[in-house]
Amino acid sequence: MGGSKNFHNGAGGTYDCIAIMSYYAVCRDVVSFRKIEEIEENLILPAFRRLRFVDINKPFWRKLMYRAFQNAEKQCAKWHDYEMHVAPYDKDKPIYYEFTACPAAEFAIKHGLTDIMPALCNVDFASMELLNARLVRKTTCSNGCKCDYSICGDRDDYLKEQPEYVDKAGFRRNT
Image 1 (cartoon, rainbow, N blue to C red):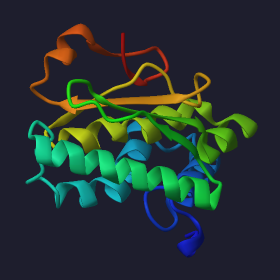
Image 2: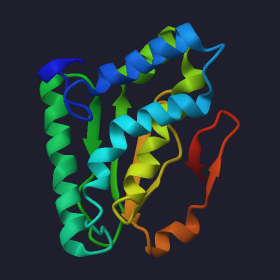
Image 3: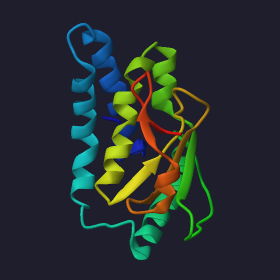
Image 4: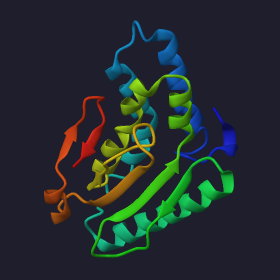
């Protein structure tokens, strides 16, 4: 879905979220939150599973990941779908970027589907874990004004200061 005119998560990335939300809107009485989460995982995680050899704890992979985010920022600007901002690289700090506009979150808010957004957003944590990395996130576009990403290696001391929890809505978050 979406074809080549959508960048986020590859061709159709935004539209897959909207399709899942539409499915949920029709079937919410008979489909579980976990099932929606599983559908999203089946769409996103296979690409990350093929990258299990990547280890963000190593400088080479960390820098390469940063460059991938810089490229994503350029693609977002080209397609005008997500507004993405990547902070300058600092080898001693987590990679940081944020989305200040997310078409999937905007759709969910407009159509009263924010209750299912954790099922779509939490996959970001799982994808990073497959790269020996950890995501530290405090808010998303569907429950705040931005979706923030701090990404570090899974052995980084930064994680000690950022315990993870699941909030009342079901979002994986950090303090």
